[in-house]
Image 1 (cartoon, rainbow, N blue to C red):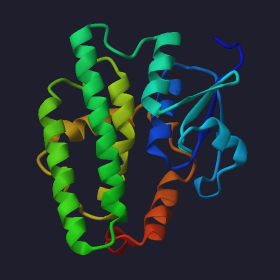
Image 2 (image 1 turned 90 degrees about the vertical axis):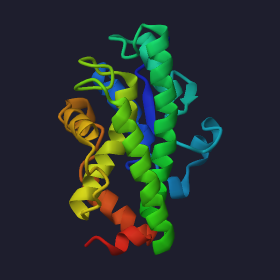
Image 3 (image 1 turned 180 degrees about the horizontal axis):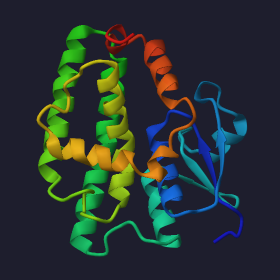
Image 4 (image 1 turned 120 degrees about the horizontal axis):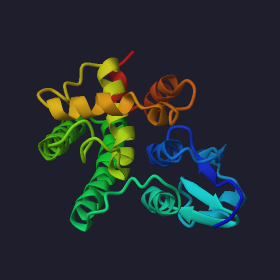
Length: 221
């Protein structure tokens, strides 16, 4: 392992970047962070990111990409370990982490799709996804119980955004989902989650929603 501080290449509103920031903060790892403009990606970034996506974690001169892979690397190298040690529980956590990545893409479509009819369909998909998640959330306060896991770091950006959406407009997406609501509250009290948001995060998110000119932007001020 390089003795240099790892460096995270980031975009201010990327939920996948937030996953890695939460893991870094939760483990009290010293790191540097550099923000780039995804609409005008620097040449040096395109040379180290195979798909031109963030996050990228530079470990010395070695670039690691994809948030799940980055977080698993961090969990193997730095304590305390956030993945459960039991192989079955670890596999279940990994499966849900893959599912949450899909949910994040659905969330992006939710606030960027332009047609009202398509918006309604995606909203139904979101409710179905969150309902399944609510049924799987059998422990408190986090997915595996008292101990925060990589799965929790993966879902925090998703639940954070749905809470902000609810504040902007009564989406009712979490109606009846008491377990997900409690999970969201527990996650948002963590310093690591708070620090994953750049200053002015909510304002930047609202600005991004309006720039997308999706149907959701017509529902908020």
